Image (tube, rainbow, N blue to C red; front, top):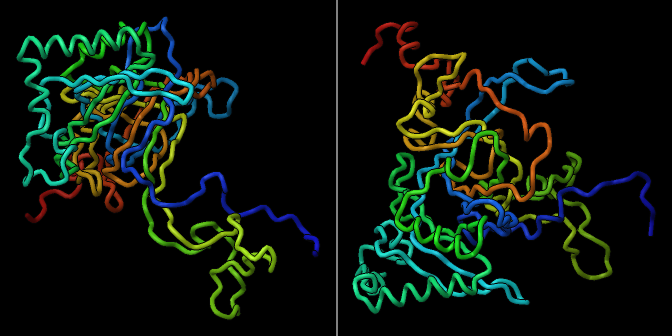
Length: 389
């Protein structure tokens, strides 16, 4: 066997195999942050919908850096996060083979949005889901049964999670009625305190600012943008062959030796590209906007122009952001409208960038469809004057 004259690092990471379509649309939290009983009870994750991107200008606060006290322009992503509705509580016990569910308690009233999640065809079904369960709350025997389940949780459970669903109807950019449902782990306090805390949240709205705070580092979990079946050059980044190559040049020239008489899994091959489940760590929250409050606008201390966070003409392929939102630094996976799971960081953040206090000077609201020159419609009207209707 011949030797290689020059080193040749492989193309593409093998850490992300198999590169196939994700089984689930909603990003799955595979590990929640470590529990600390000394802290108060709190939720550790949230759900939001990607609206789009814009850019901001801020002053860097990093002594010793060349950028210290200078302005920088950064890309940010807007994720719309209407309050979640808590509809249930699940208890798990630890076994040698991992967690095993102990019991589940649901709230009395469930909206049609979350009931749709339990049916394939809503308009043809009888819509009977949870009617018998809800009747338990109206009888003494049923109430005793639910109380017994709660007491069993308090006595035996190791991990407590709440069942919460999104209010997808509130979003103007998404024409969907079926809510997304997920389990969110409760951390902090003792197990009885967690169960009592989760039970108190039944049928209540949990806003995003009760889970995350400004300047916090969070993780984004979701499914990337799908690109369908792609060749090896796009999918793995291998080098194109010379121009005169027979039978095409966007190929891998040699897919392996004669023996072993199989194609190795490490060889780049054509196939599915995108729509993969991914977790991105350490996304810094630059802003949390609350609907109906001054924080929802794009006005800052330095830019006092009255303007909303939605750019002129709306976010392309999404529309208008009317509900609560969070602004995170940089990009995140998925196209517009994609459901993003936001999770608290798994470890304590100590880096300078994580501890930096962010002061926004300017948030861009020019049109994202083409070359936007104006921040508001009033500014555009001043330049153009009266235009044809």
